[in-house]
Amino acid sequence: MRVIFASTTAVVLAMALAGCGENATSAAQAAGGEAQGQGVAAVGCPAQPKAGCVTIAAGGKTYDITDAGVDMSKGVGVSVTGQAKGEVGACGPKLAEVKVDYLALQCAAPAPPAAAAG
Image (cartoon, rainbow, N blue to C red; front, side):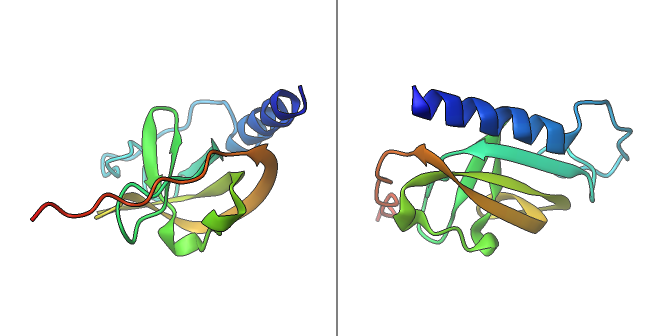
């Protein structure tokens, strides 16, 4: 019950921070679909899909939050806000000015990053 309440509160908070209104976007958009500088909010468990990458999913998209320094060893969910950088790196669409808040939402232990096939 506590986890459900915490995650519901986090989702409501993220929606409020993101602003649920429609924003005009420029023709030059990042692969995530956001125009450079457009706000992005995500709430959930961060993932390490491959070595050197930390990502978070929101709205069916996955964002690169590697440079935000998320402490994966905490094993908890995060609330992330940032701005689309308008570029895509090896880990996905990049975010700038990322703010990370740790939540009381317990996440499963992260799987080790997949080894490169050789």
